[in-house]
Image (tube, rainbow, N blue to C red; front, top):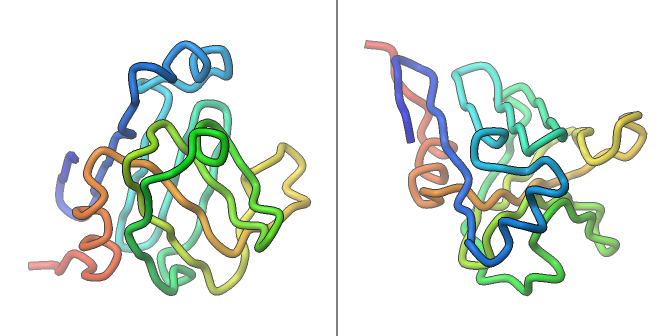
Length: 136
């Protein structure tokens, strides 16, 4: 995680065995990042992008481990329309939203009430989401 003032940056954790598949989709460490400020949550996952006002985030929790079939790449849950940006099967953070967000497909027609991300430091992201940076 990088932290400069109020901007917190989190890279994605990549399981080596899934890198070749993810690379075909344009998903590489240098094209993936979660950025959190006092105003905005921004998640870039290769060509996919989710943007949400920080105030739209209603909660977050640690989750995982995951099945590779349900977690690697970009996945839509048929049960609840939640979106997953997954590069690892170990652990991630499920972020819940007050108003569903777009980002799973290019037209923005599908909206997602939650986004699961497999960042490098899931516990730190969880802490950052629960405790916004204080200006000081």
